[in-house]
Image (cartoon, rainbow, N blue to C red; front, side, top):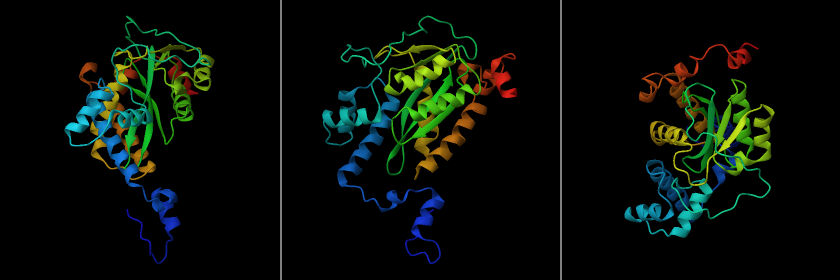
Amino acid sequence: MMIEPKHKRISISHQCDLIGLPRASYYYAPKGDDRYNQQMMNLIDEQFTKTPFYGVPRITACLRRQGHEVNPKRIRRLMRRMGLEAIYPKKRLSKAHPARKKYPYLLRDVLIDRPDQAWCADITYVRLQQGFVYLVAIMDWHSRYVLAWDISITMDAAFCIQALEQALTISRPEIFNSDQGVQFTSADFTSVLEREGVRISMDGRGRVYDNIFVERLWRSVKYEEVYLHQYLTVADARRGLERYFHFYNMERIHESLGYQTPHEIYYEKPLNQKQTKQAA
């Protein structure tokens, strides 16, 4: 659907409301550098989804091979804006925020063999036709079932907390694992888990396999949904992702799950707190 500036009956303001497009977005004319940065971020996203172990030097090299005259400084800045960090072992070059409590990694050598034994969470970048949003998902490690998700135009903790609260209406995990991002280490986020008596686990910086199942989820979301569509607005992205996550949970079979769906594996569990909460 397109905006008609000279529509006889419907004002531009009302047309924007009808298609979920902020009026500021309609009137905004992006600068050349902004448009180029957006193009680079989309290309970075595609490359990083294929090779999440590539850091700034190799991402820069890949874009140069495609004919883009970019330097590592720009790529580093854009990757930081996107919340991307290569998953490979590296030296500890940064210190944890002194005001944030440190949590150990609790899943090393642990056999995850039942639903709600461990949940995991992560954030990824999702492109729009002009701009982008951030997507958070909370997933049951054993079944790959996506319990909750949300999107936001900012990287604050609020949308992550909202997704967590939504997931906790379904059930409660024994362990909740995430990376050390500021959203997940914030007191507002961890206090929700502590309130529920959930043990908090956090990946070591630069560890390759600590949150590997969420990385696989992001590849599926990107290749099977995001890259196949051009979301015009945040509302378009929400509708598309809602459609996809329903498919992912209810219909998409996984070889690693014996060609069953995440929903079938997650709800094989016996009557427990999850079902009690639903009954309530």
